[in-house]
Image 1 (cartoon, rainbow, N blue to C red):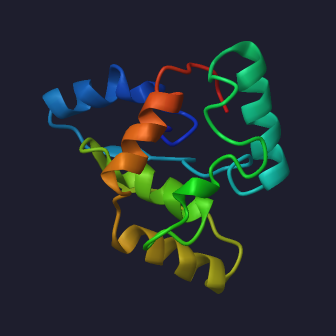
Image 2 (image 1 turned 180 degrees about the vertical axis):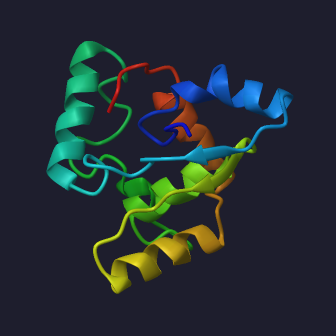
Length: 135
């Protein structure tokens, strides 16, 4: 069980390739937690990462920094996060949290097509792939 997601991609450096090499399944936990579903917390984190130089100041907008992910069959940043979390070839399953049946239905819908558009996935990897700070 590992944590891999939009804001926590570090596992893709060594652990996930090793899982592929060893033919091991990976259960992805906590791919969507506190910061992604709460816009103010996400904005604060991205502002902090910009301040620390982890991402460039002009890489994403200060307000709704991941809003560009919402298009086509991606209806929210949370949906994008589940799709991204499931898209790595080493990931066998993604644990989703829920507080209601509506929330569960939304999570299921996101994972029915567990892929982001290639350009969006590549941009996320470029933006956050080298950040080794827990988010």
